[in-house]
Amino acid sequence: MSQQHSAAPAPTPTTDAAVATVARRADWWRDAVIYQVYPRSFADSNGDGMGDLEGIRSRLPYLRDLGVDAVWLSPFYASPQADAGYDVADYRAVDPMFGTLLDADALIRDARGLGLRIIVDLVPNHSSDQHEWFKRALAEGPGSPSRDRYHFRPGKGADGELPPNDWESIFGGPAWTRVTEPDGTPGEWYLHLFAPEQPDFNWEHPAVGDEFRSILRFWLDMGVDGFRIDVAHGMVKAEGLPDLGGHEQLKLLGNDVMPFFDQDGVHDIYRQWRLILDEYSGERIFVAEAWTPTVERTANYVRPDELHQAFNFQYLGTHWDAEELRAVIDRTLDAMRPVGAPATWVLSNHDVTRHATRFANPAGLGTQIRLAGDRELGLRRARAATLLMLALPGSAYVYQGEELGLPDVVDLPDEVRQDP
Picture (cartoon, helix red, strand yellow):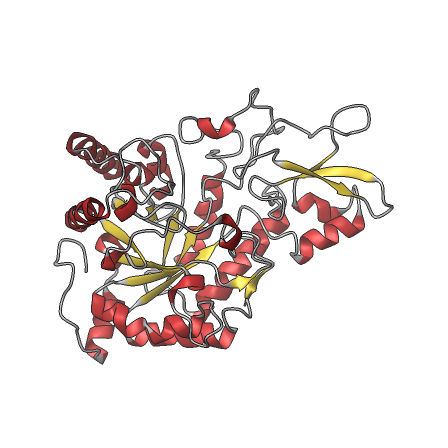
């Protein structure tokens, strides 16, 4: 399934020579097909109704035979699961629902033996509110060094009853939650750009950078081949946390540089990370989930001394229209050329409705819809879109089940949906 080859090559036997060839290809990621696995729903090995690492491991030969080059695993870390694992309580532990560190080690080793690479998710913008650092910050109270690792601020108003600024959460409502202090009184507020259970780290604090450099080394030493960086455009906030001056801020996302997203300071972090990655053999890579106003700003993340790839969300959001597709393809290639990075192409992932369903509906409904539409039309368009994507120069990302033309289930009632 490598780019510009047929979508379903014949199964290839695993040989030491084949694996060695994969290992030697220094630029493997420039035309790779990378398959995203959402551990919760991919393969259940023990019958408890939840996918797990052993289930993924058992399906690695299928993915090898499919012809993908690498497998990206969405978070499997220890987590209360307030946001399907993107609220991490321990970055060096596997959540028991998925298995153990030994299971992770076996999965990585088996993948290597099959000539597959493993990319893991990294969530550096925020932690879980059950992370030891945050629990300590709450217990130690205002002014403690532990609170400096997050964004704690006194509130506005006569009694501090108003949030420190007008930022809104991506999940709706204020981006601030007020805590009850150890003495039982209403106290400071903390910043969470997503759920209240996901407090944002303060990347101005040196301990945060030190911790994540250590986390990178932990997983690199385990043998992973790279990291997909969640909210790679986050982390750094504008100095003074200035007000945005209005509501319905979500409508601004993707159209302008926000004081909490796509700040220039993130690039200093990635230059430090790249130095670590380059210490390791085997051409490990970074992939950015960076929602930016333009593909030109996305290109800033993949300059030669920063990250290797960035998701092309402008392409994902393009309507089923030949001229519009041509325009975004040309603009993407033009933007990546000056920085020497490959373009990436993606049609579906865990955050959007599958494109077999999106293309079954009229244009203009967005990327998160719950309408079945014309299933036959959607499948035809999805096949054509995938064929085009795999023919484009660069690297492609395939979401689990996409090779089967799977549509979304759109008639589940909210009370049975576990993923927000």
